[in-house]
Length: 354
Image (tube, rainbow, N blue to C red):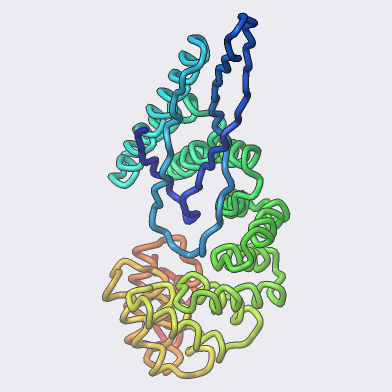
């Protein structure tokens, strides 16, 4: 019996396909004087879809699923041909999935989609084929087709937690929050220790303005996975929305401990520090953003604002001007620039500056 590996981009571990032997006995009696009965026994093997086991969530590494190509036993000729054809299709589908996964990791998304589609055609009742295809379609930007493939995977295997989770994310992107929340909750019924689903549920609730309900979701995600960057960042945003600035600052610092070059965290933390009047603490965060990304209009504006709050208008004006140059429709930067000019009694510039 041969073994092939099928790559599935997922956090669920390999399914084991159990086989059960079904035995039927055909006794043929031939009455011949003085001879014993002769019995002929035939054993038929039937493939049965096995149970799937859920894994610990949180790993983003693709997991290979080992599939056995069904063996062929001594059965009538038409059955042998059917089993051989089925095994051949499964083998081809497995090879296509392996190749599609390699293409996806190389960024060759269109080619990966083509291979996954053919794999799903050859093995239409394998949920993993549809799951991989959905992932590739989502990366291609084809959200409608991706949703359809996740739904197909869930038709075949309703307890597919990762499919629920990923489908929920697509629905959040379309602002269909109630539908998304239902899928995240379903994922958590299946795997209550799925940190990603807890975090995604929190995000969907926060986007609905349900900050009080969102915070426990992020905290549970972080209890399960303490260095979960996205959960720390979203918790910081939500705490800030709730007016819990000190707690939000602590979460942004955690984000920066994990990922020091996270520009949005530097920028947002700087704004919180400005709101607390901690201008000297805020300014290094804005400058850090500009070291990483010198064309960040928001950071130029925020740096100018912190300097202006200290009364350093002559230093603030170039920051606002730079923000406006980078983003001409940045209304806040234009307003701040005008105010800074007025503070410097540069009335003409305040009126005429582009």
